[in-house]
Image (cartoon, rainbow, N blue to C red):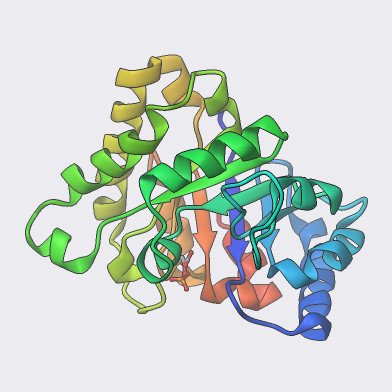
Length: 251
Ligand code: PEP
């Protein structure tokens, strides 16, 4: 059975002291959760090694927000998957719309990054999602299908055991506008269908597909009740331990 997952993307927020405090609170509150949900936090790179220590022995897993598309060497400012591995990171987010839009992250680069992550044993939270213009032009199904397949076409059914897909409509990220549960469900269903066509129904049924975009305690329950929504990738609400845990308690 596929996993329910709630993952917190801290983005470029918190200094080290605040980040460690937040991680500590998440760990403390995570004892309220039952085993029906996996919790992941993705702090900034600078915090990972120390946050990893806070998470030791807890049920909270550690993720990065990005990784390099090269293995090692003269790539100033980049962070490799080996480096992530060395601080006990189990996941990395890849393909977030902010990376695609502000840092020119292309599908080709994403393929390289995912290949490296999987080769080193790091699981991937792979993000897709249409922008407002594409939704208003009624192109959202096509855009999400294309984003999904342009990248996942390069991977095998076996690889999919280590890839979580996150549907994040760009118009809902950080805007306070959430996709309705129907809008989210129909795209999740479309993604699962696309995965079934490429990898078979069994793989599609086993792949967790998360929703992201202004998900909060007030709307998580309705979103997570949808058949094809297996949890959330949470931005703003992940910066408050109480809200983050309330979201995870919505299953
Ligand atoms: C995100 O950027 O991954 C996200 C979902 O942000 P927010 O929850 O703040 O919309």
